[in-house]
Length: 452
Ligand code: PFF
Image 1 (cartoon, rainbow, N blue to C red):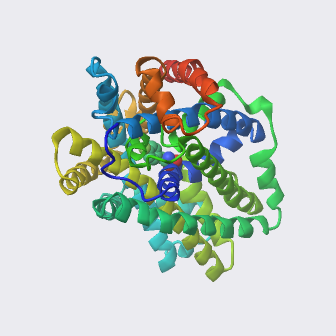
Image 2 (cartoon, rainbow, N blue to C red):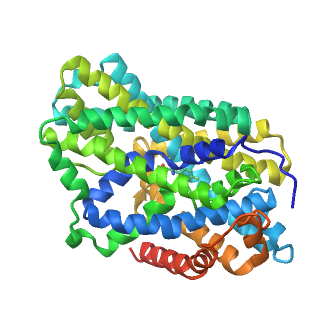
């Protein structure tokens, strides 16, 4: 086994950093909406199954591969099977995926940061309760040239600076501060939302199982969301796995991360929907929910209170997005450092600059370049589809096949049991899920994504 060069200082540090990666924009605006849309409690049951049976298996697989080899996906696969170097292609697919996701992430996080500023300065409150004015404000803002790009750049640069600080002093330290803060923020918002009149309608929307709404599309959305939310299928958890202390119990760590991520997603729904329904508004999907519906909700509250809760909410999203963005950029920088043997600082700088440029392209796709189409989508939607439907399942499928069928089984068993010192009663179930269940489910997602 290779010696550990970079590592988190403790199990708790590893958990905080990985939860920081997992809890992001996906939890706060995507999960609550699709949960409500595809049948509330019915969706939740399927989602929980996918998260624990497939998402967590992938997370453990990536951790095993990363910690065993002490490499990023650039070299991890060929280290485990030196006779099959071709498997390093997984790292390349992962890097492409990360590159697109992080560019979009910079941009949307920049939007959120700008809305945080707007809620502090009273600009958002000044729009009042007029739904058209609020939607128009968002449309004008997101299609404008400079403001989104400036905020995306600020966000990207902050991310880059934190990563440059290193694994323990940068990533781990910031996650240990921000994750408890995020939990407090979300709990405050839940209490506020649940004490509004008529809050129960929002809870009913989120939790009452309606199996008639749970379509095939909903089931596939649940699997896609499970992968995205747990940050698996792009190699980031291979990189984080290489930083997990060697005596850490990977199974327990994965359970903590998976459970925390799921809990935060559910709490986000509890913070959002009771408030939306209490104001007599309809939940919207995607950006509309966060940037159009919620500002209306805040503006129905007495002025100062509304501004405070708006600022708290956008701050929550900024924090969630930042720790995810860190892991995305770290995934890219670590890959480059290993492939080209460049120092950490230089790799981070290179990818910060490249992803900012890509974020500019994606942003202009919303405005000045909106007439430019790729396969019938504008640039923003095309990147969004690549990120959510195609790339992660491809990379996840290859990873799980590698773990289940290609890498030596002894390595898997040895790494999960910390060289025989831990009991791994779950091992056979894990291997069955990795060999059969996860690949079949992932192929189903891919085929359906392509057919649609
Ligand atoms: N898990 C993050 C979210 O839910 O927003 C997104 C993400 C971060 C995906 C890091 C992939 C990744 F490597």
